[in-house]
Length: 324
Length: 223
Image 1: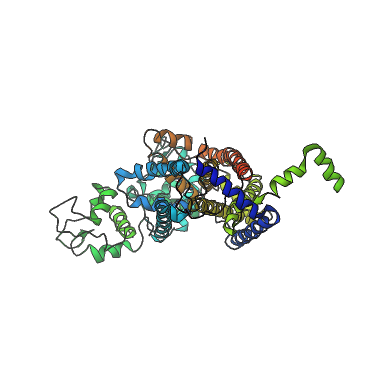
Image 2 (image 1 turned 90 degrees about the vertical axis):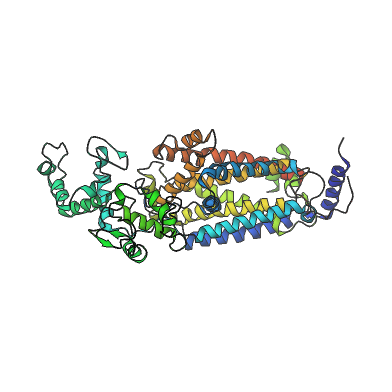
């Protein structure tokens, strides 16, 4: 037996329908106007802004700042406020639960009341969700990129392309990607000098007798490009910006010695990269207390931005500071 | 002209179809905001047309994908505009479908007798998001590659099935050639088939049950 409110709802609908107009042309007219306006805006954006195409995907580029499509940005941003151990809950379980509730909504919220003022809880919940989404998206759009933007040396980029074109990775690997027939090149830039590379690329056997590496027959400028790329392979945390040395001077040098220059209050950091990884250094600069409760070093979270701390960490990890 | 119409009407009763579709009465008070559903349908068609045009010149292999997108943008007549329409159309699709859903949410239009229409609508919304996620990788540029990497890693966080889900999504351990063909197949085969089915059912219900009337205040009568 149908509940009486359902019968009344259906009857009221029939009443309103009798009072209403036909789909054609009245509703079609409104639809056409709205569709036309949307099409004009989409076409305008397509012509004026177009669809951007960034550089070709490079799986070895660890300095790229991933950014999701804008409608995922709120989730991306929300995850920044969640501790790592709860990431699965925030990233997967919570959204799945929300979607499930959305699907089940008509079976949870039953009964005759439809007007938003007659369903205050759901109305408020809806407004909170919309405000939260917009707020997180805006904060996400404005938040600084984690990886410092590094100016890319065209010579290095050309060398990187040569490395790919010559299929060097069939035999050599960088950061665990590539073959094992030849030596691992992940940190080769910190082990070899420029001249060694130049001679090596002219004739591998001259500097490494018995090497099975083929001669590459490169043009002199191609050798320079490939060497420039090899010299960036220093291990460490990735390239740092020219600002990094100044950051060190301004914030660290009064207490810490680096490459023979600086204060004596804190430990010498010259060889830090040989025994600490980036996660440690980054966390320590942000706030040293959890690592070392006795320390008199201040935390720099708040003083420095996250990208600056990242930049400093990379600088400390780099083996090629002194050569710059 | 009339003869042709009659010919069809005698066989498949086209006048009945016209009456059901175009002469149906829309309840009093239906305003501009109700056009969001039709706008979603229009954007679907726009995405289908531009998508088919793009698929004609696109190659879903890591060695060729990027170059084929460059080719579309630079060489094909109107190629840049078609890509632009598809890209911006996608964003608008997400916006308009979501606004449509928000309208239904606040008006309580998902209630009896339209529960099924709502459930289908939420599924359509999920498919639209799926289109966005898979389509982002296809140009094989830095942005798409790394965003997909983040997405696949997040999927890997799911309890129990995370590892497997992330593997199925990528087609292996690493994000590479199989991921691209897989995303392409999902984007142009799986999702369009799902979307057309869901939208077909959704629209059938809308026409069959009629567009919901605007909500009225509860006058305190208890059921």
